[in-house]
Image (cartoon, rainbow, N blue to C red; front, side, top):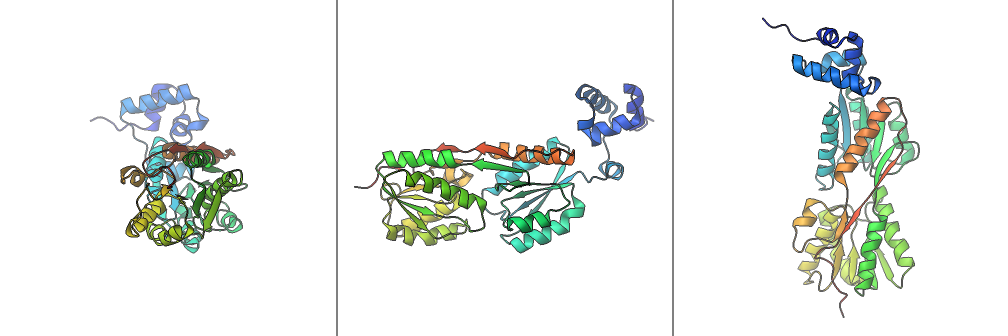
Length: 327
């Protein structure tokens, strides 16, 4: 009968100590890459599979990363979740997903609840005020995605150049009265995107009409259509693609044609933006890179390092919802 491979049999085969084999799986950053590759290859040849529970007892780690999102139904988050999950799998970690359902109170309660179950947290677009978020995350490694905060490592997408490039295209097409549908009050991305458009408009011969903050929801965009028409704008920047889709639906009910009557711009380039008719002009977020960078940053934190904030660029996508300004 063939005996089950252990860290001891691997150590004997490779010619290292059992503790070195253990570190190769539990703390790979502490083992030289060439030696680690030899250990992993030998383990594979011997049919060894590290036991997560046993490894947790030895290292004090669960092998689980927590990810908190504000609204799993918003189409921005599924591709980000998938990217984080893929990156976590590459680190031999599992992902525990939690949805706060747009509640800052729930964010605090959920972090407290899952803290003992995870090695660290990736929090996407948190709604808690900065001071309270720092207090809630005290004592647990955490990386913030889609929000920039002092003293907390983050991964953000800077959409400013891409939004302003699209704005220049609108200006070239003759648009001089533009509506801006601001996003949720508590969302860092909403403030950042509004500032990008506002700064651009101040440097141009353009009248910018800012409409009240809306939630990143289809229904909110649809409800905003009446205000868009009343503004007499010829082009609209919506906070995100889901809101833009709602605006287009509402405008259609009001008898407006896109892009003949109005041009619409979204942000994020979720699947909805690519499949609607006409396809949506928007800014494409680098979801794969956002996910990988967030997991890499958390891995650095767990290793005792201090990762820098990572800023990734968005990419302008000019599609069918933008056309010349109406005469």
